[in-house]
Length: 364
Ligand SMILES: [Zn+2]
Image 1 (cartoon, protein in one colour):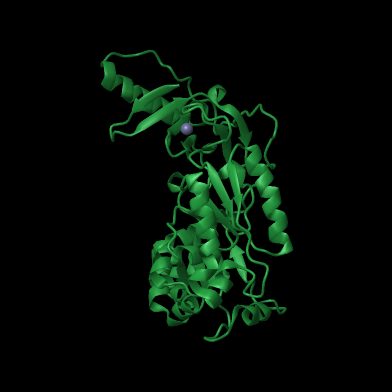
Image 2 (image 1 turned 90 degrees about the vertical axis):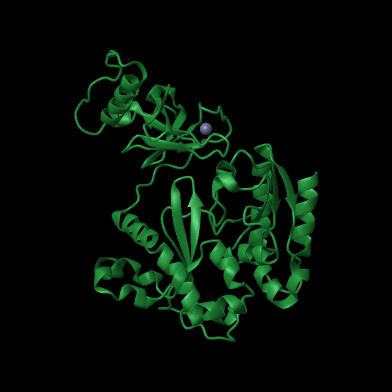
């Protein structure tokens, strides 16, 4: 490993493939334990095979790496210009010459994680198109009355939604000539509240349909409407998807895990910091994803059978990974099946148990 500083002052660790610690091929990316900060319980290093660039998503480390074999030309240029600046003397050619076109990384370790899944082109295009509209979708949430009313009826202040990057995609946004290409890709995302997601493999989105929702219509009625044949899906996701959470490096030492995007917004509306709450939004693999600074996890999943089952399974996995776990089950009564529903009916009282569990866990 060679640490260089670029002209822009950025520090880059130039590493050899053989230095990667227990790498696992994940399709477009390779994940490895980070030998730079010495992590041995999660593969925080994520490297793009096509470009050789990678990043450690551990908050304290945050290293930028370039794997020599996967981008020989660039590694050579970086090293040469660095050494020229450093010594002004010609140094021997450290990097072997380029051999043919793209180099296929050689990953020796057995597969410990799910097998690689290549992302179809249309899904890559879809994600790219959504990322480009991110700012416009947030503006649209502010100027679209229908979307604002929906949030308001679920008890979520607009400013809480905006602060977490939530937006709305109105169909008019796709009408312009310049949107011709994106129109087909994003049609299924129109009339949806759109939540940004985080994953070690980058940004994603999940969208909740407001199709045929009318002010005064409750969740159960709207859900039933969306479950009829030929209705749009209630939720759709990009690939990769991820967690509706703060960036991994900002996640608190003690975190609360909830199931739904609206559960997270509910707890933020009640006064939690955005770094304290992670919404799984149907994404598993939390143990592998939790950044190293997290020490305690409060599980506040839904009270139904599925939620209880998920809670006990997760609690076991988290405890095995050395984390402190505290359960905060949802009340088994008629006040509502998730935090948001209870919040609408009971107000602040509905989340008192989460605050209690969180402060207890944090001071333990
Ligand atoms: Zn690291």
